[in-house]
Amino acid sequence: MKLTDKELEIMAVLWKSSNSMTANEIIETSNNRKWKDSAIYVIMNKLIEKGAVVFDNNRPTFSKNARTYKPALTSAQYVVKNLGSVRKTGIHIDTSELIKCLMSDEEG
Image (cartoon, rainbow, N blue to C red; front, side):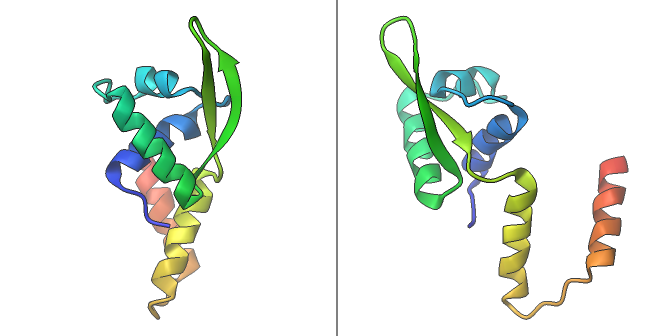
């Protein structure tokens, strides 16, 4: 599963939250607060199609009920899925080296 930069931006917001979120909450929490309602719904539908996000519930708002969304996988699971696609190309991944790289990236 490959996600676009815009999809990853939304996923980053969802991964940081311990609760499911409405589209408006995602916009408010995102670094990119310029999202238009129509754009966010198109991206959310793409994320659902790709299996990255699931519809969680309806939450009452001022004028109507709003859908809430949550990630269908963790950020670590997303990374592992993408490493799997690299491995399918025949590239060998040394897991101990990978862990070292991840650890040094977190410290830097």
